[in-house]
Image (cartoon, rainbow, N blue to C red; front, side, top):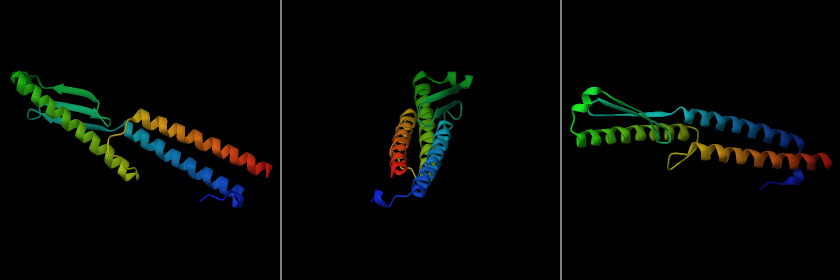
Length: 138
């Protein structure tokens, strides 16, 4: 429980340093999340798919020989490669987050994560400003 009667300026400085360090750490994780890419293949390597950590397909490479496949087989193999790329991206994302002590059940939406970080930082900054003003008066 926080006791404002025993709160010193040094405590505010320590909290501020700790919060800034955590914000930098989370910003670094955010940058790493944006760099995650999963890959998947199908049709014995004739299809290659790349997806980002949020599961969005960013690239599909088709070897010209894949066009010899029946359209239904081609579609199934393409879906297999897409699913594998998404699963690989999700696995890499979860490894990064769990290594950072962040638990998620579903892949994060990077825009939502950034928005939550911004809102949290702004709320923290406002509360620290208010606390600083109270300490200056007191």
